[in-house]
Image 1 (cartoon, rainbow, N blue to C red):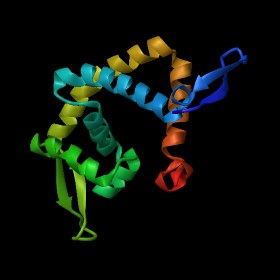
Image 2: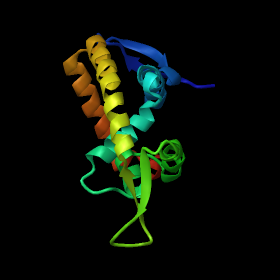
Image 3: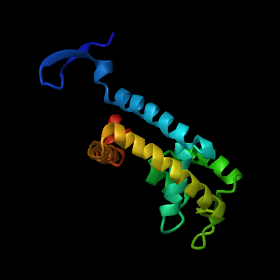
Image 4: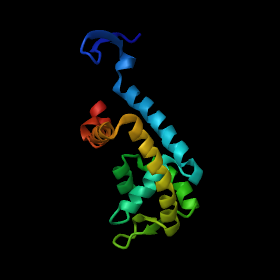
Length: 164
């Protein structure tokens, strides 16, 4: 059985909460599922999911086409999970792997012209869902939330080794 832990409500008064209710990981997963569903639903009409949108956007922003490992690091993803997510993008002709000019053993991810067109179409839908989120949460709170989440995402102290 999970034991209770002491916490405080928004007013600062002491209360007892369960470990599940106080679990940061569980709260983040719940929020992530809700937001992912919202963004996936909004992007659905152009045949793309939020994870695929993030990949296309990251490739579009990259100064130099990244390797799978470099892109995985940027997106805070496992390389094998990224490889799996890339397959439909390659099938659609939105992304292609090219042999690196500096090291022929490495392959770099290229956003194709078709991928750029798909990203532009998806961006219109993304802007709409982004605005909806900010309408609900407020622009300042949304910006603060993004800042905290990005801090968490890039803090190496919170990685797998840190949990051990």
